[in-house]
Image (cartoon, rainbow, N blue to C red; front, side, top):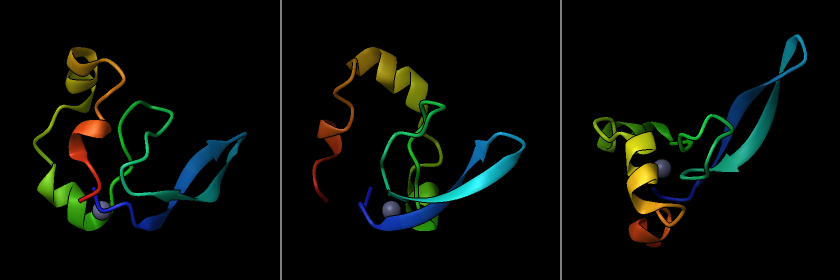
Length: 65
Ligand SMILES: [Zn+2]
């Protein structure tokens, strides 16, 4: 994850709201938000499975890079 700011849409009532997050932040669904570039790089990863295996520490593993 590159940690770049990015815009995402989250459900809000009957509508959607645009918010700014950072690539790699965890979304309400439990999956990380990824920019297009990182989504391609990490497309084969199973985030929920890794989160289960690593507890809540799966962000640290990626470091800053
Ligand atoms: Zn990224």
